[in-house]
Length: 457
Image 1: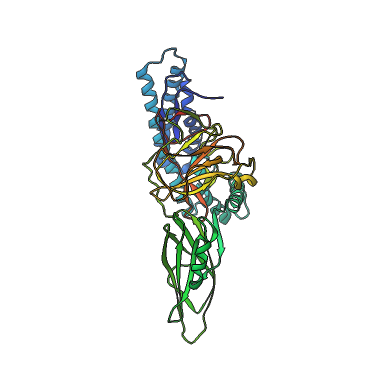
Image 2 (image 1 turned 90 degrees about the vertical axis):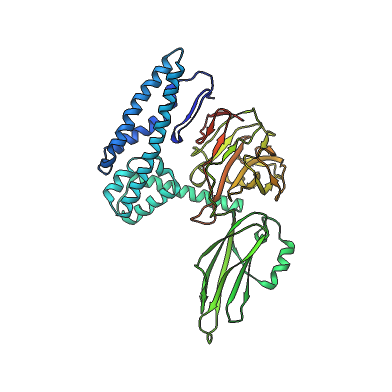
């Protein structure tokens, strides 16, 4: 069912209104769902020092819900009262964020102190922070270490979810070639020949070469032939009579079309032979990028058009784990797509005319990927055949036409999949989506959800 009118993204306190009628009490539904867990949390001994904050939220929630019901029952809602209601929802959203932060810190403290009673109390309450991949991984690691012979159903469910996610990520990495690994280190004399045949984005477009030094060691140089930044990882299976100048494994960022000395192996004992066995890998993008959270992205469609959301953040279908912060917009094949943010094109594929439902179709997606000034990537997927209009290396302005939507790749119907990502700083190889702010005519959107409807500014 299509929803119109006023939308509230309660978790982040973003609200915007249109003139169409709507049941006002439905605006508070996300907060109301959270209040059930917060009520349980307020009864836990570990929350006793902060009980006043939790009770204050719950009491105000009750009052605000009553106000929303009165507005919904009224034939002509008073503007002043409606604005007061929306302001209450904003403040409740901010308080909810504070409670989430408190919950996360309490969980961290319980695990650091190996306080199993507090840990069990906290994880029995399903608040939003438990959905975060990093927190979930830490909780599972603590559970596996401290509960070898005891099962907690809620964490077992988290373990199953993480296992499923890791399998899907593995398939995605293999099929989308998001990470190139087990590459052979070249001799410096081999580099020029490789560069003659290397193409942008190919396995050998990022080169690591080694050259013997006069003192019996080795010097390593990395060269990135691509127009975009990559994150390189270097590891050694064997180091015999050699000492590394840096920490192993080594993770390093290589800017586009640049080369740098990255590592040196020094001979330890001059009288003994040396040997090493190593390989390297790389991922497109920077694991060290810091997203400009204040940046407001354009909705990637024509100004004045109206778009719906078929799957938003933490969507039930495919937006999970590291892919949680993505938005699917159902639009007809051939809908013009515009850059949500300025940058440089680092990925462009438009040759496929094949799609379907399932991971095996991922490799057939057409796309445009744009690297932003802060090192993050804007990803526009499922474009039609011939629908990627921009070439790798082209500078793109915000709002510039970059392609046409389609139904290629792993897709259940014509739509645009949009996300902003960086390389995950833990694995240093897989992409990790980031939450962003989107500008609509109605206001700034920070938590797009299924059923939402926006007018493009």
